[in-house]
Length: 290
Image (cartoon, rainbow, N blue to C red; front, side, top):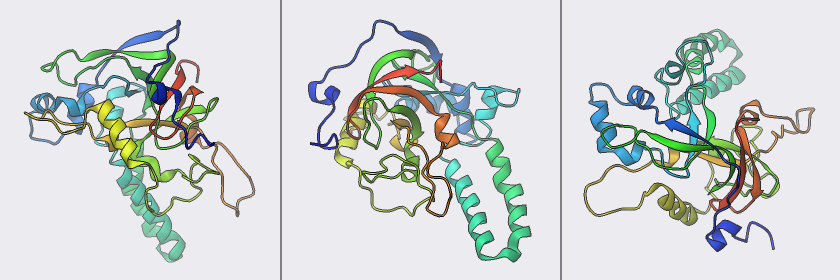
């Protein structure tokens, strides 16, 4: 029987892995980053408080570091310069449009280059330099009006976390990715989790929606509740994990397989016990050595 048919050890037994050696850091939710991403002319602190569950750091969530300095300036400013993770989609669409037009009409090269320089390139330079910090061990809030803004984050050791959209096998290197990047990776059994050579058209979603919804509700508390709403985490904006697969170029390219830089830099752990999509899997964090 394939691992695609069997639940993981953590999901089947309801147990969590533990390790004697743990490396833990106290990490603060980046309130300034969220404030820069919110709409203008609003009381950001009140909004972060009223919808506190939407912006908080949940227990067992993959935590990203926003303080990485990439240009020697304000590290937080690099991550809050008007480009949220979701806005990366618009940057990608501009890039793809330029490439498609260049292939179809060579005479439009001058206009396309100007459009690239004026629209796409400035946004790409302002993209946040996210790095994986670890796995949250507690809950912290984006607003100090809601409670503590600092929580413990495991940066080294073994931990049980929720898997992403792809099957994970024992011994695989583990990378993080945003939920909305799912169509960038292949879902077939032969190349499960490997990046597409060419960005595909959004086809029918083969993932197990029922299991995904159930596991997300357990992790982020997205199920409907009675009483005043305090916001809900949007799963399309969270970071998930998957096995790192080398990029497989198309048949027209001369090489068979190669590293994809964007995926290679996101490797932060190793799989100890694998499982199906959205199962509980055991990983060993290596954020200090990758």
